[in-house]
Length: 423
Ligand code: PMP
Image (cartoon, rainbow, N blue to C red; front, top):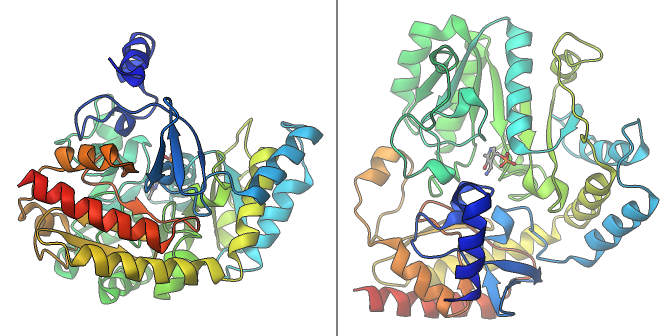
């Protein structure tokens, strides 16, 4: 019995499945989740003191690697001043000014504590603004676990069958329409029938919760155009892509301006932060100015705000993104040369898929048509070799500024070995 085995056995007695978020339980790969105690740079440390190269990076927030010095300093200084105030304070102001000065479509921003909360709030604003009820989402896009979004989503649910969750009333789900990705005709048909009822279309501009499914730019532009035509708001969910594909996220990369945008992960430097923002006319509908209520005891927590600003300050000049793109290209070339493997990549996000020559995959039907090798054995072989990928075939990998060419070369070697062993 390993140390993780015994901790997991104890943990299962006191928490559902022994974890506090489902994908951490290794259901997608089998075996016992490895208990981790800390991390430094590109490495995460397990409970037995083993240093493992981390490509999960806390599922995205740690774009600068574990233990970034400036983020750590900012957080410690904030703790020394006082870690929760429940008042107006200058720290969220500094972060809000930093962001609104650099992202033109974010004229106003509200900080919350998770991506889920950001999405839930943005949807409420959209309903309040349009006085319509229906939200359109896409098959395979995950937007957190707000009731109305738990339908045909991804992430920990990527392997589940419908419905995504028990405990959601039919009325709520009745207000959510689901369209396939990469399919203009299907979208046109939905809008032709229901266009006048749709408050908002929400999309991950780079879907990254059911593998990585980069969309055609024309498709994204079509989504935006249909929203304009029918008076629906366009919400880009940039919880993963925001401040990762560039400071201005996927919106900036693809040149698509949202009405509202949601952030999480990188924005908090690894602390619990989410945010929603957008055009002033919509954000001024939020309480206390307007009639859309949204609040939070721990919203804009000073430690998280200072950590987030310290992270974003290191990203704003774009050098980190250029470095990550170079490393991403190396990764794509080296993993792409492995027989029996397809890699889809955008910037520092990558998805190794255990199927030969499958690219480009853009939608769930594309994906379901491919029968790959089982991911579990490959995942465990890599872990034995000192490499940690997210524990599911449908989670993407995250490069950080702490990863190097040597790490990527090692990943390619070990992945090749693991695939050979699995044949
Ligand atoms: N939206 C997207 C695109 C996400 O990837 C996630 C989380 N992976 C969420 C929303 C929910 O964020 P959180 O887990 O912080 O609630």
